[in-house]
Image 1: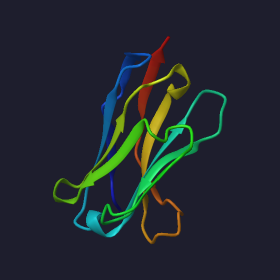
Image 2: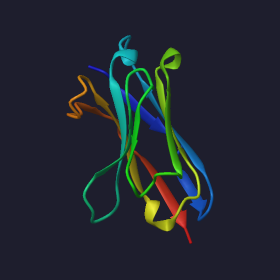
Image 3: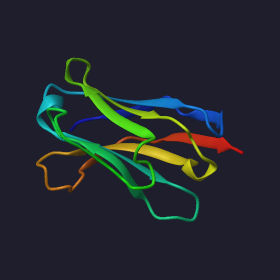
Image 4: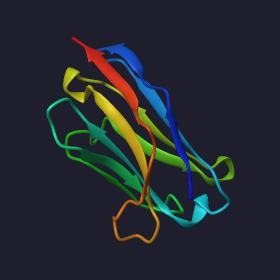
Length: 119
């Protein structure tokens, strides 16, 4: 079973930037799509961004479009989420997850990393 480990969260002022990383174990990272999700206190988990196995196609939630960028480095088994122009409403625990077959049924999750944006 793949293991996913997020890093890069922290406290940042509104307007600032953070880059999250998600390192995956195993040899098949380059064969599956990946997604970033977030969950704020009292709210449901929501998808933030997703990327295909090759990196050729991406998806963004409307709330982050133009501010966040998802990317991957298959040689390093890592997917990234560059977050710019952060807003207090971006405060949440961010998770990466694996979509093994392109059906958007994510079957492996990291432990999450906290992002807090102060106003």
